[in-house]
Length: 189
Image (cartoon, rainbow, N blue to C red; front, side, top):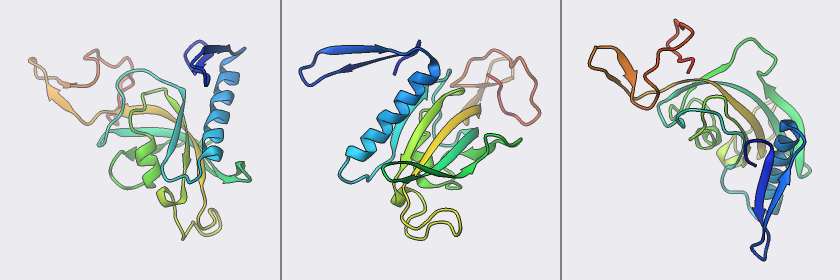
């Protein structure tokens, strides 16, 4: 799915097709269904399935970068979305995490690489990349495949260097000053 609500694909005869969606929501819903179809058509889900819903802007995140994330997590049941088991979407606090620190499930570490600020992504995570055979008591049954919709709201890049005037400038971000001062060190860019 591309910006401006359209999707392109090739069929089995390598003919190019384009679908135009009526809204951004319709394009995102289609993308989610494509990801679920990929999951249902794989004989064994042994890696994280990622489907971008919105690409976002700026540099893609890498290991060591700090992120603030809004997310919702569902159990994957009966070949589709089951019940929500966790979400911070309607809460005041975003989830803060440092990619590569091992503080979240392995599937998130893998599935969020390359995301950009403002980006939204759909992740389908097999049990071996999530909570495995133990699950989470009262919330995630053992051997559960999980589905997450994640949105990167803020990014703090790890690689920084000093510019000639002594100010700290990220080597992977624009040197323009942030329009909003942030005491916690997260860039509004």
